[in-house]
Amino acid sequence: MNIIIIGAGVVGSLIARELCRYNVSVTLIEKNIDVGQEVTKANSAIIHAGYDDEPSSIRAKFCVKGNAMYTNLSQELDFEVKRIGSLVAAFNEEEINTITELYNRGINNNVPNLKLISAEQALEIEPNLNPSVKAALYAPTAGITEPWTVAIAAVENAVTNGLNLILEEKVTGIEIQNKKVKKVITDKNSYTADIVINAAGLYADDIAAMACSDYRTLHPRRGEYILLSKVTSSDLVKTIVFPAPGKMGKGVLVLPTVDGGILLGPTSQDLDGEYKEDKSTTQAGIDFIIEKTKQLIPKVDIRNAIKTFAGLRPESPQKDFWIEESQETQGFINASAMRSPGLTAAPAVAMYIAQQISQKYSLKPNLLFNPQRKRIVNYINELGDEEYDTLIKQDPLAGRIICSCNKVSEREIIQAIKRGARSIDGVKFRTRAMFGDCQGSFCTFKIMQILSRELGINYEDIRYNKPDSRPVVGNTRD
Ligand SMILES: Cc1cc2nc3c(=O)[nH]c(=O)nc-3n(C[C@H](O)[C@H](O)[C@H](O)COP(=O)(O)OP(=O)(O)OC[C@H]3O[C@@H](n4cnc5c(N)ncnc54)[C@H](O)[C@@H]3O)c2cc1C
Image 1 (cartoon, rainbow, N blue to C red):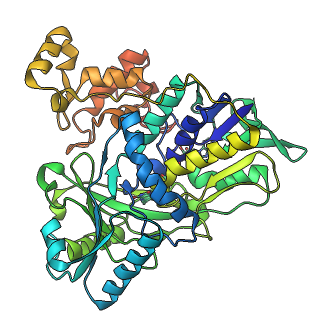
Image 2 (cartoon, rainbow, N blue to C red; image 1 turned 180 degrees about the horizontal axis):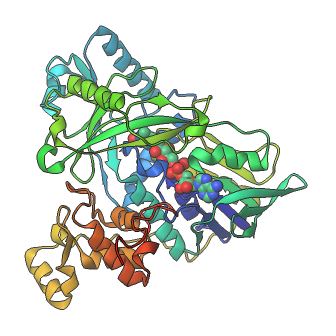
């Protein structure tokens, strides 16, 4: 049996890994140079506790379960999850009513250890919270991670378990015969398929339209962010600090990143369907984030900003995930409309889809499946002085620091390339080089030199992230 997954975001990557637990042929097709580089790379990175979703929703069904699964998943795949907890702060009677509703919803959704706490308790947890806070909802199971790392780790592990990973091929059609999926057609090849799983993120509606007429349309809901320097701002908050939610979602928040920075955002702006690539930030969006986050944490200082960026939520009119087989086309399964909390829910969604397929087609287990994968170690931050010194004597490239903000050595960059990085962002998202205060100003060219040497390619052939994103287009003089 051939199973093809379209889209290597966090959802498709985890589905691919889950399916490798069975004795089937699994292929993952991604149009980009690398995995996890679309919705998965630009979001709040929160493993949500699960009190926000209506108990009847598909989101609620998968969020709390996905949250719990991250503990084991992060151990098996060796990526970081920090269970730092979240606070929803209420500043008046109406907001106290809102957080009480969230508490009751959370209890209904079986969120563990949820608590309504007093202003004093909230300020004890988060001393920089606006002192006019009246009460808060505290969820200790909420956490943060690096979503792209989840996708990278899942795919690395799946490949060692037999996954056929196809990068830089865009799915352009799906052949149907007798109301069953037959082939997936890309801009370069065609692949025979018994089952097709649509995990194409913002483009899942376009992919579904290739296979059936019973699909849900998607439009982007843009979320803009500001990242503050970890050097100046890392002690601003310890937990994820939310305002009371409104009609457009969870509101603008302040939270730490796994790497130690502070993230402010996101905004929430619906765009028309044709703006699925519009990741621009706006003056209005940035001003709004500053205003809203200062109301929550008055010490927010925008002079510490090192980057602004935007992500696009795949939003459907139903405002819920769409996880089911098409009624019209047998073998075509949607994992679509994965707006927030899609990152949190992804492991549970992946397990559900794999188990459904396994039961329906009586799949046999892959007895050789190995769930473990190891990450690239950051030598300076993780090794003791003596151990690092010995390593440098054996391997001088382990001591040659390329990214001085995040202390990433040439050896770590070479390891990233050996594990599949083919672009500048491929190195960045595997090693955290270029993620620091200078945002790559000092190390991008050194990384390009290493990519060129290790891959045996010219500078003109190096890409940032997308197939056509080339930083070098020719000589300035001959
Ligand atoms: C602003 C914002 C904040 C969010 N915050 C959170 C949060 O804090 N916590 C949380 O749980 N969730 C959050 N989410 C939601 C979460 O980010 C998404 O649910 C999740 O990343 C979706 O992953 P995905 O794999 O479905 O999509 P993607 O990551 O977009 O992956 C889809 C892949 O399909 C590929 N593709 C598309 N078309 C084709 C084609 N024709 N051929 C081949 N490949 C194709 C794309 O290139 C892409 O790599 C947030 C989202 C946003 C935008």
